Length: 117
Image 1 (tube, rainbow, N blue to C red):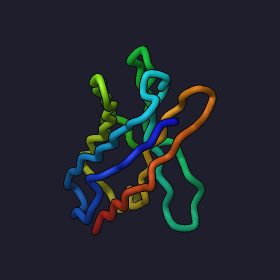
Image 2: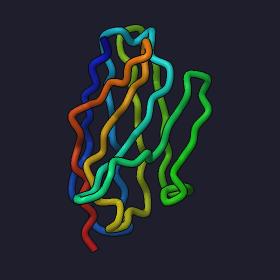
Image 3: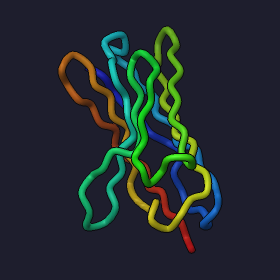
């Protein structure tokens, strides 16, 4: 079982930057892909960026060129980061960390990102 804890959200002005962090613990050696999702009010949860165990990455068109996903593996914890630059009001959402391991999808509790215009 994988446990995920996100941090780094907050309030930022449009054009600003934030870095989200996610710490994965538990059965980390079984983690394959990891990703960041977000859910804005009254909207469905959507994929923001993902990374495979092989290091490939993919991004939603709306964040390409502005967001960067990265992953750091240690012996006890896997860290997933999302660097967000040039933030826009439409990036306001709750951001969730996701890890796929042993045919199961684990989710963090979410962290709020609010971009003021």
